[in-house]
Length: 367
Image 1 (cartoon, rainbow, N blue to C red):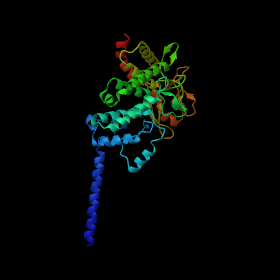
Image 2: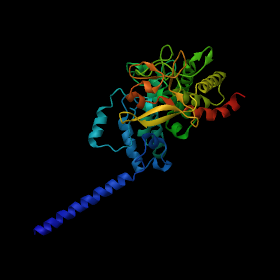
Image 3: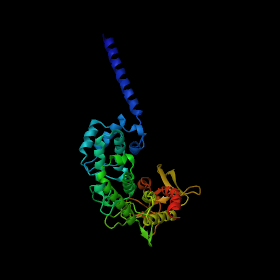
């Protein structure tokens, strides 16, 4: 009798083990595992949108949407949620963390547009339209957008070009106006006039905030004061500057505008010439083990290397600089502490994308 009972429990344990292994195997083989949220939201195969898995992801997206209409950033919305997770997120709906930074809000809206195009589910349209109204409500009268809406005290109120926040918004609005099938299909027609107005004002504020030196347009700061439109600081190590990083997305966006006005052409030409003049030629990152045995990095000269641009250039000298959390400008990353030296993107090669596309743009609109 005891032997039979033991065999019975062993059999049950084997069945449970097989079920667990099967479940884990199925989970690990789902198309979204190992993907970023941005990839899942907009770059999965067309047939995936509308699938059972995508519907579960859409439930998460709607759950994460804040009462204000936008979404929080840096959230892997495609990850499975437990019941406690869902309860917590539901309780957080009233948080004032709906944001445009790090592709938040525009990414979720594009995902919902894809889902609606393949399912016709009105819930997706309602959520998307709440996001659109969030964007329209958040825009300043001068055409800029803050980082958060409703406004949060501090540097968050500045007009935010950082991490392509405004460029992402304008690109979304442009795609709606250009009759992108998925976005136009989910957008209520009565909002098209407001979208057009917001789009035009957004371009106007880009042109108005461009830093002008000796009558010539240059580039932009990562953020600009919402009242004066002048370059503005953010965190303690993010001072007012010419930006060799955030300006790239703005330039590429302006270059995509068909039949650009004289003001836009002048803006692009000035920005490209400024970037060309501020290359850090033949530079690259060098990773090494420092005296404390830690993995460290520095910038070195290398005749075989390409060019880099600093993220920040001094507004008076136009020389590149870096900063520690004390807000004191330094000429090289060796002069700042280990944490900021290795924890921030001080240099970039992103402008190379501008120089790849500029000759064709110049030939079409300048020459």
